[in-house]
Length: 509
Image (cartoon, rainbow, N blue to C red; front, side):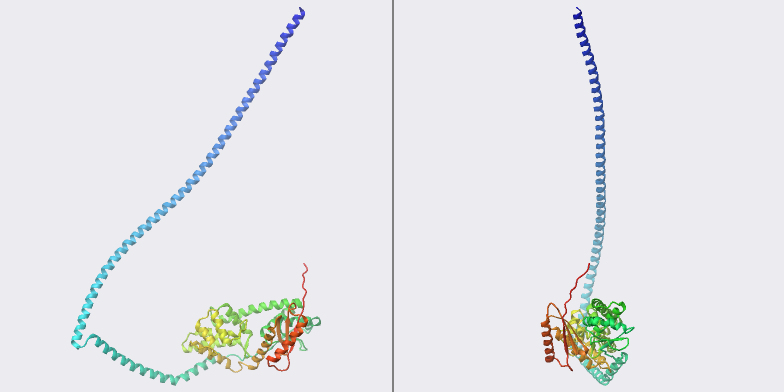
């Protein structure tokens, strides 16, 4: 019985425990479900808020786009309206002008009708008057007209012949006197100093110590300077002076300026000498251009081509029969201006032709043409007017004169060259001989530079080391000597020195 009670109690206790456990588990599960529902509700609300915010943002962006498009449409619409208004105004203006034109046309038509009517009336009156005159004179209108014309023509011929005879007689009496007056007056108004042509330039130095630095070790500096400039440098016992000897004034000027820079700088060695000479050559070229510009401005000549200006500047360093070419050109230009003014011709054209008449003497290359013809071709090339070109080409009668300026240039060129001391034939021949020496040697292949020095008694020929070897150098020297003997006339003897050197250049970096 007790066992049964225990079993029943155990069963009842198990059931109670199961119920209790089930209750507790159910309550926890219920709480968890409630919490899950609350969390789900919160998440739902959050998502809804996010969706609403995103929708609001999209709505705002869409509204902005719509507003932007609306504003653009409004602007476009305003422009279209403005254009419509402008077009309407133009149409109204055109319509108004058309109305005015129609009115004017109608008035013109009316006036034309009146004029035509009056013309018919005048023709009728004119015809009646002619008929009346014909009836009175017994001749037709054409016969009267022809008789009057014949009478007037005979009278005019008689008066014209008498006038021509008077002019011819007066011209014969005064022509020679007037021509002499013009020429003499022109010469007196442009009289210039007598020219002096030198073949040397004296370079002054502060002390004789500098001479040793210019000569250099074993004479390397002076040899480099002579090779770079083509000028013979004479260093003798003359105190505080070095003589630069050469027939080409440009080379002497380059040598003088280069020596001045080298002595002032103090660094004198072959590499520095070549650098300074190259720099000075560029400076001289700039000075040539500046001289040409200044000459054109001084003479009041404008619109010259830059290359013609450069050639005018080069005249400063050239001579013609011992006469400085730039001085001669300026003098000729002024003479032409004075003579043209006396004769009532174009002064500016005459002065321009006088300045340019000798540009054929200073080209960069020297073709086998007379300088007047070459100058004419250069003037034509640089767009000078035909009358200027003809005056340049005809000043030595090598082309026919076609303008009145041409004889003026010819006469003024002769006046400038014929004044006392203007020209010396000996100097010109001397310079030509030295130029011919250099050009003869330059005609051989491999020759880079040629310099005639010592008054033409020595010709230095510089050849490329990669083009001519030592054996060919000796052969070249003999060939040049033989050609000079065969083709040229010269006093004494000419020494031909062929120089060939090899240089090795490297750089320390």
